[in-house]
Length: 165
Image 1 (tube, one colour):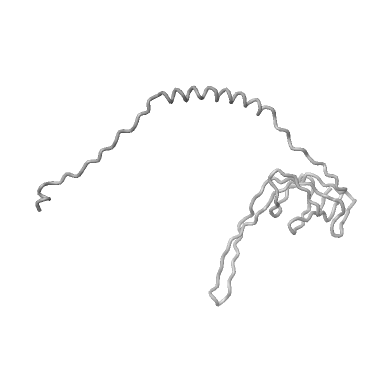
Image 2 (tube, helix red, strand yellow):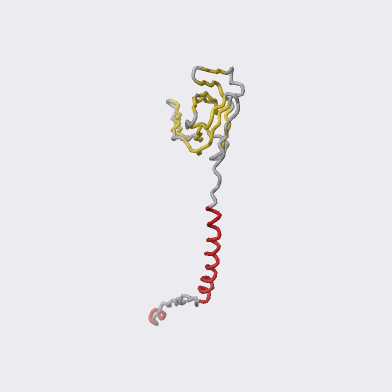
């Protein structure tokens, strides 16, 4: 099964588990998105083409990360006018992974993995380490602190001959 989706003014042919790079979307990394501008859905010999979009068809995607494209140099000039301008540009992009294609609009949403219980077990051990730490701090506080010796500056000796002259 595949679909043709429109996002950012461009059209992409996508299938499940495909990774596509689209123009920057306002979503955080790891967030699930629903692309609802589906222009065509094909499932084997069954093809459903929209006019302009297929009714009730949606595509589910997950934002993997945000990135930037390659730098392109934009060069403008006018002949015989001594006019030259160079400017660089990098397009902001978003990497998406297609999770599901639903021609009827019913997406199967993948739930994020639950946090493991090992993190909570680490907290009591950390508290025990912190309880031992104040005793070490007290021992350090009792130790005398040595101050650096004061620097003395040597004054220049002037000879009496220089004063007489």
